[in-house]
Image (cartoon, rainbow, N blue to C red; front, top):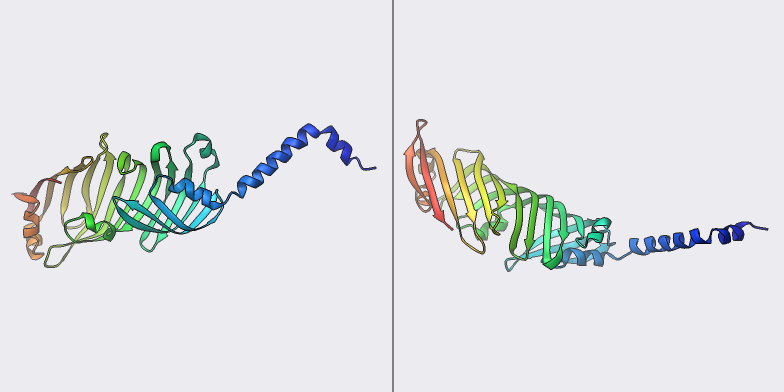
Length: 264
């Protein structure tokens, strides 16, 4: 006679919770990806279509984000949701998006009141995506590392990170001017605005600018630019310089310094 029924009977208190646990694991592991899409899109301005996979590991064939009344395509999006983060009521997922010349990889957490946090993220995108916010035509590629970013709607809660502008080019009205590569160190100013330092990495123009952007609008840019005046003359850029700077002095190396002090 088989001893199995006897074993099951004697260990009934053990087998019942184990069975329930296995059932719950099976159910949770098969929660559809649309639930994960809901977690990532709730209050974030992100929209997804073509969602496949599970709650924990899913993919959207097309995603987009709406910012300041404009929608930006993110391309294909995939995520890996952290199970433990669900216990804190602040779900976090490792998110990756891909488009040609445009990528994002980092951790995104959804909080209460529509707040979102981005941590340890790397971003790459063409300058053309922000051209509408810049008064002169520019070209190049942006790449950024975000240590921490907190948003609630369009309100900035927290920011720490840096941005690089590689292959920077500016249209002077007559031709394109190659000006090298630049970096920006960014942080929040503690009052929903941004404080940033802009400086050159390579190129013919020395740049040292302090940028203050206040909320909900406005700001100020101060500092200076420096290069041989012949460089700006050959590029027909003196008229453009006069729009936002004033000639200040010539140093011992023959570089002309231009003082910048403008309100945004």
